[in-house]
Amino acid sequence: MSTEAPAAAAGISYVYAVGRAGTGLDTMSGPVPGLDGGVLRTVRAAGLDALVSSVSARTFSTEGMKAQMEDLKRLEEIARTHHLVVEAAYACSTVLPMRLATVYLDDTRVTEMLHQRGADFCGLLARLEDHVELGVKVYADLRQPAEAETADAVSTPAPVSPGRAYLQKRRAQRRSTQDVYRAAGALAAEVPGRVAALARDRVAHRPQQGELATAEGENIANDAYLVPAARAGEFRAALDGLAEDVPGVRIEITGPWAPYSFATPPAEAGGGRSER
Amino acid sequence: MSGDVTSIGSGTESLAGRQVALIDLLDRLLNGGAVLTGDLVLSVADVDLVHINLRAVIRSITSDEPAPW
Image 1 (cartoon, one colour):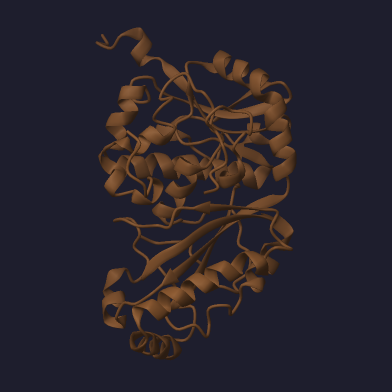
Image 2 (image 1 turned 90 degrees about the vertical axis):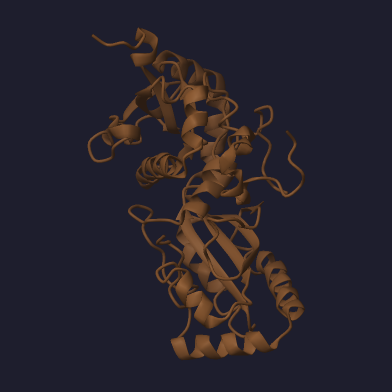
């Protein structure tokens, strides 16, 4: 006999993303697992489908989440599962990704939420239709090549030939720290203009620091751009070679991502855009 | 950690099946995504998530300014 209270043992509804009804989100239950192996399902209301799976009420209660967030491995597991579901959904059709750990007591509450927020969602979905997010990070890299080698061999494919990269690094060492930072700042400032015709919107994320920031050098700009999916290649090409002749400065492009950074409903209190 | 970081000039990839760098993922999942009022973990889903011990590890997500809490 279970020692858990019925309420704690029951599943609650974790929402990954919301898309328009009838766009194939209901076909995802087979191939893609939800959190903790839960089966994905859709909750339909107001012409929208919410992509949902059941999670343990105890694990995903406020207290449970706080405990889980103390554990980086568990946070990573949750984040990656959430992301894989959103990514698979976005491959299917335009969806609005939810922030991590958006949880409702049951599907009825999800239905209510869809009715309440339906108009906002439809507006956002229309805005994001056929767009992807691309990340652009600018680094100032003052480190020695040998030191960089040991950091993490697989994290960054060499952007240029090894010999050339080596020479670039040697040249970088000769320059003063200040020069490199100034050059990186100037280059970062140049990026928005370069992609202005291709990007519909831009959000500046905080530069990446801390233990998880394993890339070489110091991240001095960490932006996200909303780009028409069909023009992602053009976007990359527009930044091609920009950092090539700037010693110690590197640009990295990530994505395409589902448009996480552009998914904030404007009407939600406290849900302002993260432009800083 | 394997990343999906691609050098400039490479072509468009499919959205699915890439292992992305955790820090890039957390930038999006903790800073981005639609913020709704859920029934539970309301505060966790917002900035309070970094109120916890992990904030040193995931400092990219937290404020540079002195913590508001």
